[in-house]
Length: 438
Image (tube, rainbow, N blue to C red; front, side, top):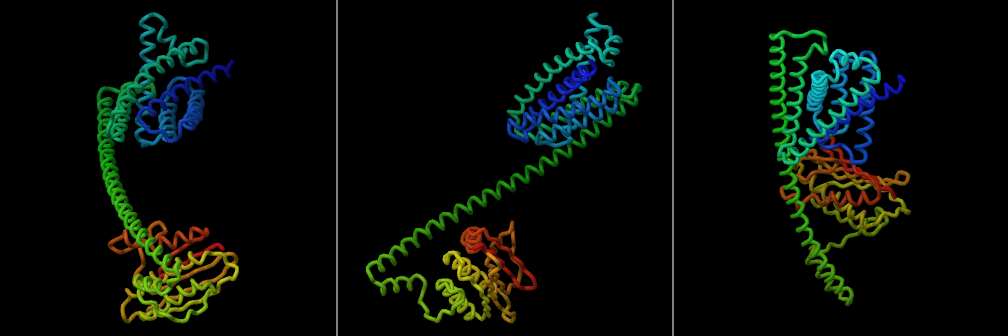
């Protein structure tokens, strides 16, 4: 019999917790999808109700420890299930529990006035396990359910037409907490067993008002900060969108022009007009300088890029060292290698040219095989450390839509082979380390 009575008490407490979560759901956003939210709500409510039962095993009537546990547990449960501020939920739980206590007290007064039950007898029944308690508690929880569902529905409708949800939630919770605190200050003898005089009640109400004003002021300041942050974020998103749009349009034009150039060269070659094709290419990229291609990797296109970039660097007074150990069975696409090396060299040459005239300008390229990986390390002289955001170098040039694509092309090629890329700067030496899985 005791087990059934305890189960009933747990169900009554569970109903109170679930109703509280319904109120919070009316004003806050859920953390989970609909299905998960329902399951997690029942699990959290079950644990909170179990704690209430454990507290009530010592004393069935309301007590200060039970009240403190319920307030904190209700608020923590709401924080786990909904997206909101814990202090707001703490205030809401104070007001909610005070509301339930007020409704229960009014029910007993009405039933006593109607002669249905004697107040003294009802108090004894509430403090002990018996059948009459089951009837009284079931009736009280039914009334609680109707009232909470009604007020929760009103809150839900009001929140649909609210502009600033964050401020509205704080204001609602502050009103609930303030009203609940006032109720318990006036009826403190239910918790501590003694009544306050008028001066003590007035002092308690003043403290509640002061705390409410301070908290409301703090939340208004936080809400303003959040609004300013949101404005800055929106401005940044708008700027990035405009930049992306300009970049797309610029690249679309470039792609269209290059495609036409390639088609023209292809047409010359298809008709065996090699001299015309060479002349056309010279107009696009300048005079072609013939020089011997030193064997570095064994891939003709890649070796040409390395030799061409080395010659360009030396013409600008930059020393170049290339150390290669390239495996014969490597299946990395030469096009991707040319993309990586050409852009690495272009960036390294540009960084060296920014160094003072009397400074040592040097580029060191190392290619090594490590098990099934190719290590590519480019080191170059540099006067300052680049700006690295989220693992990507941020271009320092004014027209960002037209720059920074070299590194993005490198990163795309690296990602294609499941590799990694790291940047480092130490004592005027900038390094790019690339690992490619081959």
